[in-house]
Image 1: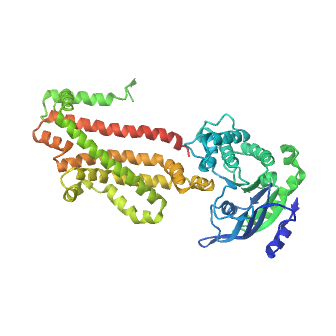
Image 2: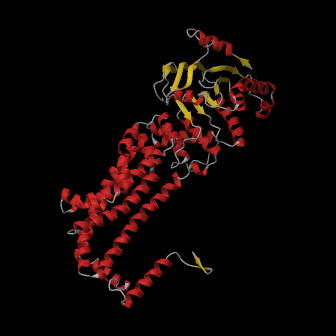
Amino acid sequence: MRNITAAAQAAIDHAAIDRSAPGEDIAVEVRGISKIYGDVEALRGIDLDFPRGRLTTLLGPSGCGKTTLLKIIAGLNEPSAGEIRVNGRPVTGPGPERAFVFQDFALMPWATVMRNVAFGLELRGMGKDERQAIARKYIAEVGLAGFEDKYPHELSGGMRQRVGLARAFAVNADVLLLDEPFSAVDEQNRRKFQEDLLRLVALENKTFIFVTHSIEEAVYVSDRIVILSRRPGRVAQIIEPEIDRTASPDAIRRDQSYLDTVEAIWQGLKRYVD
Amino acid sequence: MTICGYRVPMMASLLFWCVVWEIVGQSGAMFLVPPLSSVVMAGIDLVQTGSWQAAAVTTLRSFALGMVLAIVAGTTLGVLMGRVKAIDNLLGIWVNIFVSAPLSALVPVLMILFGMGETTVVVTVFLFAVWIIVLDTRAGIQHVPASLVEMARSYGASRPALYGKIILLAALPEILAGIRLGLVRGVKGVVIGQLLVSIIGYGELFELYSRNFDMNNFWALTLILFAFAMLVSALIERLEKRVEFYAGVR
């Protein structure tokens, strides 16, 4: 585990300094993001870099604004102040280089798995054969081959979220934004899903930004964990769990550095819990 | 349904009352109730007459025109009210007043405004049907899951795509329920409108038969109307069931 909070803190204090390590490729830059809803301050002065090809998790107590931050990055919410840059270009709204995976799956109940997965491509005006071929590939990749013609209500929660994931992969975005994707999935399916996610992260070589409230989940899947403080959300700590991912999933869950990291994060978060 | 352990088929209640009607009619106890069999015979003759066919065409035309206007205006207004808070605040109270108002009382005023003709009947159908369509559409639009709208936006949906591919489809069960209720009210509207105008279509025939105490034809006309209203409602209900199959689980 590497705690890089001090570096991050220094960066916040000296906004002019280039935060990224030399040579590191940054996919998403968050600069001075604040969000105020009425008289509630949800986020205050968030500065973050999300390195390309890595999975970064936003972790924090409920109500810390982690989903708000994710939706600002997605261009679904407007920040009150600050700027998001994706691949160096400022974000003004949703864009094709970002794809979102929703907590409640957000599948169209009247459409088949195939049409749901191909929906992003359909909106881009791609022809039916072409988009179905792409969708079929990703349906197989998330392990749903054979379910193309099923409707969402015929699938379990875990399978529905696989559809949501396949839809996000199908548009071939550089950055995938996952908003608590496993929170509505039962525990056994969640574990299997986390393992699959790691496989897909390795396979797809995309930048993942992942929101969760589960410490174990964050440590298990993340290259980097950003811990947000309670409202108003600020960056409290940045941790890089240094876990050997080549080991088997069960070995990782018993690994001492995995357990130590979970414990360290819990000690840090404890004070935010009533 | 079971009575004393015996399974009774669904249509039994209908058959039972048909038999009761026939017996009462045959007994001649009530002048106003001729036997069902002679009503049915009269109905068969009636639909072959030129005056009935002309009346049916006029009535259907007024009904269809009024309903098309009501569905278009009702869903449009309902979508606007469901999506735009200001419009909802502005119009909500009026829609709620009109949906429960005794609109029959307004028909004489409509006659003054639109004359003693088909226009008045079309407007009556429209006014009877439109409000419930507005309210149900509005409710449907408001219950569209926010995440579905966000999903469409995040995948780059244009405004027409957002409405055409997500919002209207997600609200379809409620919109159809509104249209079904609107159709039933529209049937009432067309009859009440024509009765009050009383010189066109079904209303004219009703007037004619009831004034001459031609009860066979009067009841035949009524039964045809009931059957039509139930048929229209059942058709929409079938459509609703098919839609709910997909949209119910959300």
